Amino acid sequence: MHHPSTPQDALLELRYGAQTKPSPLLWNAQIEALLQHRSVRDYLPDPLPPGALESMVAAAQSASTSSNLHQWSVVAVSDPQLKAQVADLASGKDKQANGFIKQAPLVLLWVADLSRNHRISCEAGASTLVHDYLDAFVMATVDAALAAQNAVVAAESMGLGVVYIGAVRNQAQALAELIQLPQRSFVCFGLVVGRPAQRPDKPETVRPRPPQQVVLHHNRYDHAQSMRGLEAYEAEFHKFREGIGMGQWTWKDSVVYSNQFEYMDGRENLRQAVVARGFKLL
Picture 1: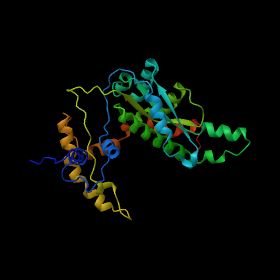
Picture 2: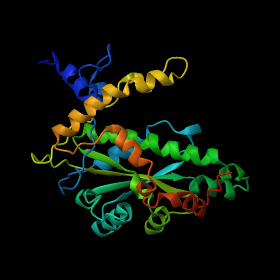
Picture 3: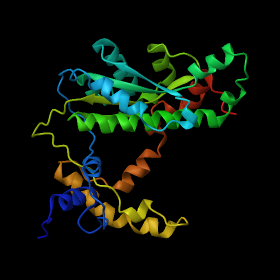
Picture 4: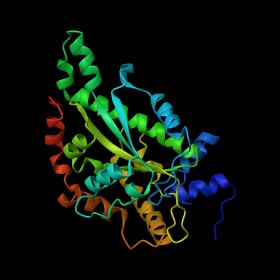
C-alpha cells in the first residue's frame, strides 16, 4: 500500500490522487492553505469572532478590481428571519436543499454593482452608455468573484468554513427586492460563513480535482489531452464519494445532470431578471 512521505504529499493526494498529483510544486504556507480548501455544509450556530467580517471585507477590497472601479458590493445577512427567507429563495423545489444557510450565522450576498458608478456619472452629467453593454456586466461580475475569493481565503485563515451558493440566482429578482438592491445591481452568488460543525457522522474532506492536464494547456488548447485525464479523475472521484458514504455517481453523471433543464430550478429566467435590474446586455 502506498503511503505519502510528507504532509504535503498527503495533501496533494487528497486533492489529486496518488497517481495524478502534479510535480514539482513550490511550497509555502499560503499555497498549503489554499490546497486545504473544502466546502462546508454543516455549521455551528456560533456568531463569528468580532472583526472577522471586517477582516474578510478588507481582504475582498484588496483583490484586483478592473480599472480600480470597485463595481461590486456585498450584503451581509445575519438576521435569522431574513436569512431564512434567503435560504427559501435559494432552495427551489427542495425546501431542505440548502438548510445550512439557516444554520450558519452569516450569508454574504455578492453583488455585481454598477449602481454606484452609474449614479456618479449621472450626477456629473456624463454618458452612462457603456453600462448598457455586456462587457460592463461581465466586468462587475468578475470584480465580485475576485473579491469573494479573497474573502474565502481570509475566512479559512481564521478557522472558519465557507460554501458558495449559486442557487441564490434561482429567484434573482425576488432576492434583489428582498434585500432592496438598487437598479443596475444583482446578486451573483452567496457565500455561507461560519464555524464548521465537524461531526463524525458527517465527514467533510478535501474534494479531489482533475489532473492538471485537464485544465492546463501550454501555448494552445489541447482538447484530446484534456479529455484523456478524466478517466483517472473518475477513479479518485469514486474513492472520495465512497469515503464519505455517498452513493454511486460518476463525475460525468454530474456533468450530464447539470445539463438537464430541471437543474436550473428558476435560473432559466435569469436573463429577464438581470434585464429587469437595469442591465441591457447590448
